[in-house]
Length: 598
Image 1 (cartoon, rainbow, N blue to C red):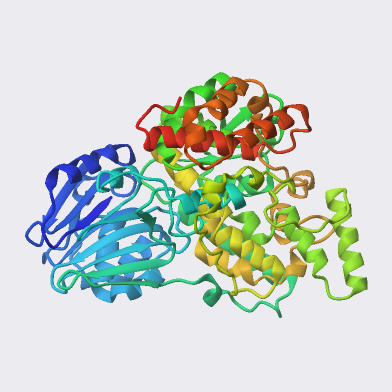
Image 2: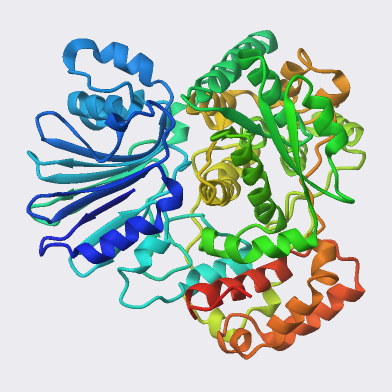
């Protein structure tokens, strides 16, 4: 979707081209609408999922002409809202789009609290002369913005907005944070100077008469977390089960085929069992790498569904690399992000338009090892700490260690800030926002991952690669009703000798063997470490020796080459810093230099 406003009037050509840039997100219908004497422009590219008739195409305008809407996402409780609105609206479609428009017309921004879903939308009100842009609670759907003179343009992806910049330049402070702390997608800043993301849970309203703009947060997780301190384990299990099944059931709402992205872990196991309980059958998709295969576990949890496996090697990932650099438009996570291209191609071949993914469980139910380590460290009193430490060692097979800032999920260090160039060091760093919403160190760490670091970047990776193939990805375990409840569960119900996210595991154990439900957590792995030392060695060496890499002033090329040589002769525990250098240079060549990524 695109929404634009300029009091001086908008030029048609760049907006038409910008909509073309989003064709992959909605190949089945594209349309644009001019309003307010061509000062307001709304455009939409539609992937038909709910009410596939043309009558539900966008931009969608109310019968009275006052409101016009462009919207990306899904409102999963649209049927319930339609029933609540009833005959207060003259219905023309069976779509969630019209329900959103009707809800806004009746309740204004107060309707947002009623919505269950993932969404970004822009609403033009011709009577109040406002343009309002809204993003969902956790930023599942993307929206970016650019200001160019008096013009303001919003779009679902970054590439269309590059057309409205006087020149395309890197945001060096974002690059500094990326290289120094491994952070990206952690706030409004992007890797492009002049382009920002509208943050999750916020809305911005532009007064089209004055140009004044007010941006406010309409959702804050901490305000909605219930006090469950008096609940029993049985009560918590019962309510968690109800919310998990409700979340999965609501996310299966579609008028097209729905499938699942799966791995061999606990979260995918629950997703598969809950989905098959609702549908009876589903297509399941997974990517697999020789030497890092999860297929034995995936096949065990996939019983009852049809499993499709994308078997991947270096040649295939190498082929996907340039297109992934372009579609992501910012640095991304690595080999597995490229591998999702093959998975979505398989989904297209099976005519599966919507896929569900298990993201969010570890952040909500405290699944990561470092959360468990923080829990042990924070136990009140020596006796409790010793008991918690024994439980940790029973499950993880090692004694708990101190959690280091910047460490990866597996505990290894993937950063090399010593290679940052002095020129980049001179840039102003963005302040790291303090998380004061949660008093517990464990919940603070989880909230940071959910709201600022891990989940936001993962959502961006998944959105771009799925939509590059015109597939929609949904994340039922980020249903806000489940997240809010999960954050209220006392931590002692989530850690024990049977593992982390213990309550979730006990719920799963009602559906699968204990060997699956209480299996140790396995990080999703790929041969990236080996490939960066072997199959991609020539590519890495050529990039580190290139004049463009040296002249950007982001990484000290000499130090980088020394560190790479040390990596080749060392333990190769974590290759992320090498991936950062490679990915940054390929991104810069594509978007700053106008070259191909290779």
